[in-house]
Length: 140
Image (cartoon, rainbow, N blue to C red; front, top):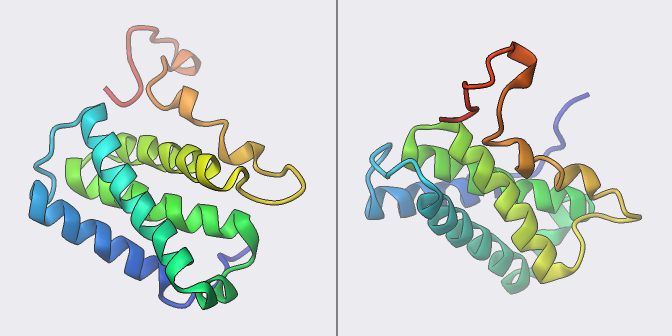
């Protein structure tokens, strides 16, 4: 399968996040903690959701709520990873974005298919039991 084409919507959202990070922290200079995840992830998520409200035709370039939620979350995740230089904090921002999006729109996709978009947050900083090293924390 290939990714759905979304014009340059994801580019715009990610560039906004990159500029926000550069102005506030500098690239890869932000502390690697949940405060950064909450700050950058929330800022980018709210910006992108506002764009969908301000420009209704923007919805024509994406297929349904699931793709919209993934676009928003990808921009938040990339921007947070830019800030910290750590992919795990980016993943945390991805799932934070999904939760914020659901709070604002009451759902992410359609027909209840949004479960897969919400089930990863509990695993982001969890213990890697599959590797047999219970003291090794994921993302630490």
